[in-house]
Each structure stands twice: as C-alpha cells, then as structure tokens.
Length: 250
Ligand code: PEP
Image (cartoon, rainbow, N blue to C red):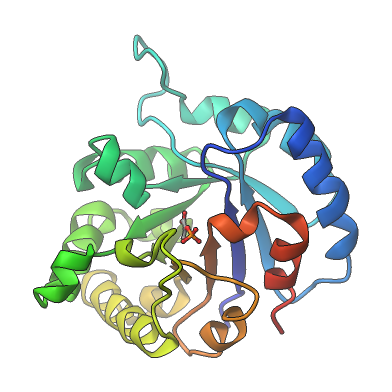
C-alpha cells in the first residue's frame, strides 16, 4: 500500500511571522490525522523557522528547489547539504514555474534529483504538459520525456526516495482543475512509463501526486482514484484552515 501525501507549496509567500502564525493554527487542526504524510514547502528564508515550528509533529518540511552541487561559486543557489543542515527532509524539483521562468530542464532536474536523494532527502519531481501541448495531443509524450530524462537513469535505491507530482501546467494557479478522470488517466500512464523503465515492482511502490488547483471541495474525488497517491497544493496551502481541510479529505 502506498501511503498518501498531502504537500503544500507556498511559492514566494510568507514571512517569519506569517510562518509561525500558520503553524500555530495548522498543527492543532491536524493533530489526529494519521491517514497521510503532510509536507509543507516554504521559501528558503523561513525553512529553519518552519522546521522549528513543526518539531515533534507529523509535518515534514520541504524546500521548493535545490542546486545539484555540494558547494561552490553559484551565487544565489542553495546546496542539498544546506537543506539537510536546517532539518529539511524533502525538496520539490522541476516545478513548472522553474521550468517556465528559470530555465529548468530535464537535465538539471536529473542532476538535482540525484543530489537530493543521495543526501537522504525525498524529492518531489514535477512533470506535466502545457495547455498547447495538451491541445496538440502531446500530453503523454511530454510527460514521458520529463520522466525518462528526469528520473529514468536513477538507480532503484535512488528511486525509493522519489515522488512524482503530475502537474498539468494549465491547471496550476488557474482554478481549472483536471477532472479526476483526466488526472487518473495520466497517473496510470506515468505508472506505466515508470514500469517500462524501472520495472513493475518499483512502479507500483512509487507515489504519484496530482497538482493543479486542488481545493477542499475537489480533493476527495481526486484521492478516490487508484493511481493518485496524494496532492501537491499551491494556492490553497497558504491558509492553514483550508490546507487542514484538504489534509482531512477522508
Ligand atoms: C503548485 O504550485 O504546485 C500548484 C499546484 O498550485 P495551485 O494549487 O495553486 O494550482
């Protein structure tokens, strides 16, 4: 059985004070939740405070990106060991906003994923097609390329720390959620691609999250689909009460 994960991606939102206030509300609201793992990905500047605020709770803290080198002259970048040092246990890699606006490629995704899992982090690797690509009937082809080039060359022990997030770009921050059926179809396709590359057993064990305008009113239907093992939530993870009701989807 794959354990569900609900992960929140704060993007470029929240100060130190906002972060403390968020967890002061979230933690008591989810204290009886046992059915899923909970992950929150704040910006770099509040990672340490988020780790402190969630110590001894079931919430794990994730970065939103990481560099593949251990250290060096890379102004503005953050190394994996720095994330480990502040107590992060996850990182997001290859988010579509990184791909669209910051030159992220499948090649950098692969280097980052390798560095993250080798340092013991769980890596949430994002894949997904744009609206044009879907309209042109190329969604499956694009996702296959993201998977093959991004995580297709990792070893099976590396893979045990990879979580895939299927995030159709047309559904991110647009309020236009993929229907549970459309999402489930692509999740099944992703598991098929993973099985072709890494074998059926590894593919069955891997968790595949859906991301794209997940809200309290659509999470239950999404989570009922067989190949959907959780959600990566952007906008709706910023409010602790809204995020708590997504976490309590059952
Ligand atoms: C995201 O940022 O990964 C995301 C899915 O955003 P939203 O939920 O706002 O669509």
